[in-house]
Image 1 (cartoon, rainbow, N blue to C red):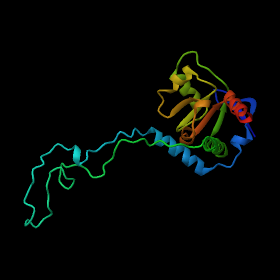
Image 2: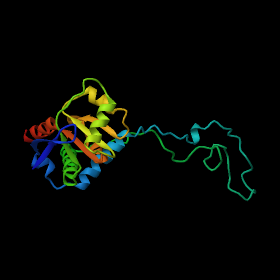
Image 3: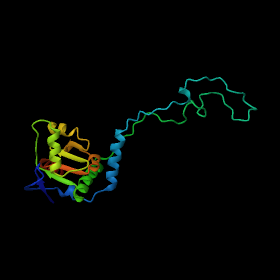
Image 4: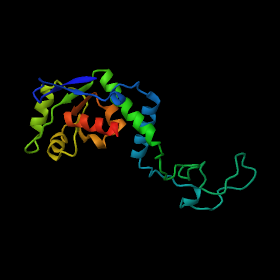
Length: 208
């Protein structure tokens, strides 16, 4: 499996990179992707929601009316959930929504996301580049040369601060080190841009 390497002007460099078959050539597992995305979204939830129950409401406990003879249900406190301003029955409490996912399932999900991008033609390999200083204008021009539209994820080999800062102000662009990316980020992007050395890192990690 080979893919042409493009330069930052969007033209072919005349080189091609070998994509690891075990990552980009597998049959995508939709359920594994679903679980990985679900885990990511669950981990983003703060879980700080809280509603006061009957015992937490500060209202009078004076009996509202006589016990019998009113023709309605008996009532002994304005704290009751049946009254406006009373406590909430079985309301939400602070909780942690995160859950564990096996390492092999997460790896399968990430590889499935890579394979899907390759099979749909949404994968672009770019030669390694660097910016002397952070420049959103330069990065935007590069994406225009590559004819990238919509949400894009740019994977670099290792942390690249200048490229990261250049893409930070572009609302539809995310720059991430290839070793730190996750299934959600890959799936959420319309186009996956990956540097030449990033592919080599993926290949080396797969062979180990």
